[in-house]
Length: 457
Image 1 (cartoon, rainbow, N blue to C red):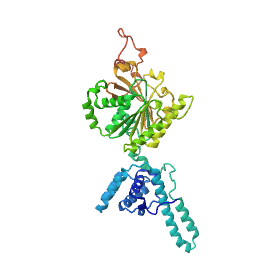
Image 2 (image 1 turned 135 degrees about the vertical axis):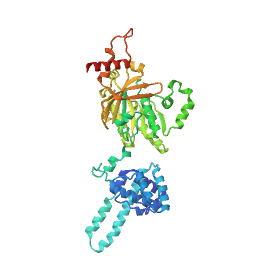
Image 3 (image 1 turned 180 degrees about the vertical axis):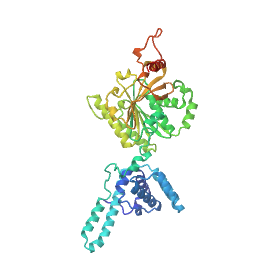
């Protein structure tokens, strides 16, 4: 492997990319730490940064946090060096480069060559002493240095990695008690699915998730395969302002004011259903990243409408392939992904939608990290009500059901903090007659169920 003789010859930009990888990517640091020598860097600020990274890694077995480096930097007595370190760190953390694999491979080869050169120079004295076994040991050690050392999470060493908050980086939902179930929100690499019947408010829930993330300062990529970009954008306008979706066109000043105060960003991209694949979305995410707008959260409305790369006579097999690929994309890109999915005909009639009512394939439930359902029957749609059920949760308890108030005019969805039980559900087919139309409102049915429960106790 041919490499340049010094890091100086690679140039400043290359060295900044190396520092960025050492600061952000644990696996690279893990593989290179045994051949990494701060003295190979000609810039004093770079040497200090590499020394600090190595000290932290030796103690905690992972990359240092930005907060730790900032504290160490404040301890510097040399003000000129302190300013230089701050500038180089800022440049490194902001570095965006699509040639990362090539940079890391080249730097690894450079470090290994430096290690081998050092071993050969030290072997000269050993050769004169006839210590051939020591020479063989040094050369072998130099050749093995820098190899892939990622054997998985080492339980006794990776305590810092497991307990570091930003490792999972949860992005909160619009509902605080749902966040409690999710340990703060959907995290990096997680797949969350919202199940529901047609017209039940699933897409509005996705808009709620996007708005909350943007309000927290995150960048959201919202992919729509069912609604148009403009239509989805108008839903965001309605949710952010609280103005009725049907009249939002008359309130542009209010919309512009809300957007001006929005800390984060939202990108809405439309694809024709059945034409776009998981690779299509991944390519768009890469394009956004190259333009300096990497998403923090991905929303897909909805995954079932993507095209599968697997040709099969069974639609179930294609759906399984799509969901597996989406979950793989979430893990590979280290991003949380929210999507929605339909329930089958039986599920559309249930007061509470359970996991066995997923349309197309039950394997969706197996792949998801978090799944909840929204149930809205005919009377619920008239009354603006519904039920949210936690179907699956890798991060806590599940099986709870909450009542909800759902306004499909402006996207306001208020989920109660109090759980419901079976006594709260009154089947519409068992309603007593009332007047000419024989119907009770949902609120009246709840009141009757609670009164019946009190009388029975």
